[in-house]
Amino acid sequence: MFWNKSTTTLVPVSVELLIDRLRDRGWRLTSQRRVVAEVLSGPNVHLTADEVLERAQVRLPEISRATVYNTLTELVAMGEIAEVSTDERAKRYDPNPDRTHQHLVCDRCGRIVDVNPGPDAVAALPAVERHGFVLRQAEVTYRGICPECAGRAGA
Amino acid sequence: MFWNKSTTTLVPVSVELLIDRLRDRGWRLTSQRRVVAEVLSGPNVHLTADEVLERAQVRLPEISRATVYNTLTELVAMGEIAEVSTDERAKRYDPNPDRTHQHLVCDRCGRIVDVNPGPDAVAALPAVERHGFVLRQAEVTYRGICPECAGRAGA
DNA sequence: ATTAATGCAAAGACTTTGCACCGGT
DNA sequence: ACCGGTGCAAAGTCTTTGCATTAAT
Image (tube, rainbow over all chains, first blue to last red; front, side, top):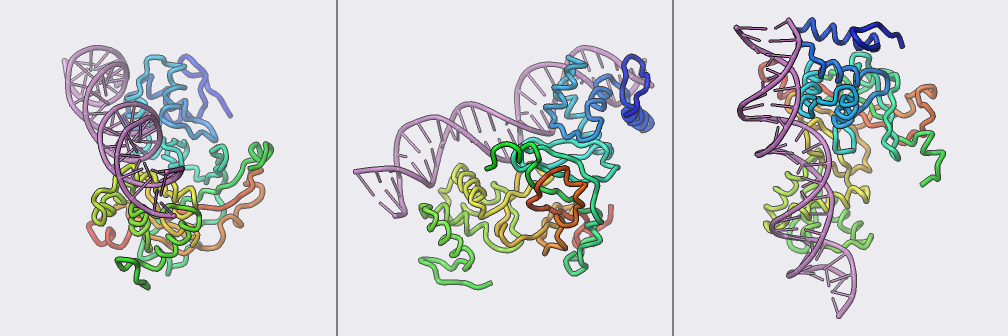
């Protein structure tokens, strides 16, 4: 990953670009929003709101839970991050919804890994199975056992 | 759909079979469990726990929310129904997880429609993208606009 | 100076739990 | 009669909301 000199700290370039994009859309650039964006950047990031809060508080102890939820909701509405529904109760948040990817989920430990998409699943669905829907996208989640869990005693 | 004469009412054959299967597994056959199983039977059923409770109470007014949750949890553990994660807060429950199928979800109204699976998505994922996982299944959710919503004013 | 964003705490939605009573087997 | 299942209500988890205060522009 490449890094840039920010005002006070080193942050990934991608976050800088994100911040720029948000400012261009008229966002007020608060330290809270910056920290949430920073925490959410990078590959294979799939945090719950609580985990975002936790990590954000390391950098900015006074940030509140409500602000984290507000910011996450706004980022989702803007299409900058995506909600990932899991079997757990809490939703998870995934950056870079633009760079289309699919998920590998471990049935044992719940770990989520990003994978590059296989062939277009939307195109693969025959017209007779579309029931009149106009399709926009197909979400694919692969389920199985990750190498770490397979290594430990098998169930 | 085919129907059978039950003890007191007409219920779908599939429910009878389900009940039989459950009794064979040592389940106590209570009226509450029977009603939950009945409510969950049929094609394109994707109810929330609350909707199951609501419909169950039509037939059995004294059934409690806790019993509905208990029964749903047990049916999931037994593999008789499947949880469907949605964008909504509440989980939905889907009968016949054995008859593999995929879901079509309307982005506008949230309606879920079952579709017959396209070509095996697991097989389609290249080995280099598997990151050492042993894959068990692939869940595919198609997203788009259903005919009814497309008919109304477009957004 | 304006006005949106924040933090707090309370409320809300969904689900789980503890325990006394009930009812299949 | 036994013992698992049920119902109730309380508690728990995750998320949203109302409103006074703070801070970006």
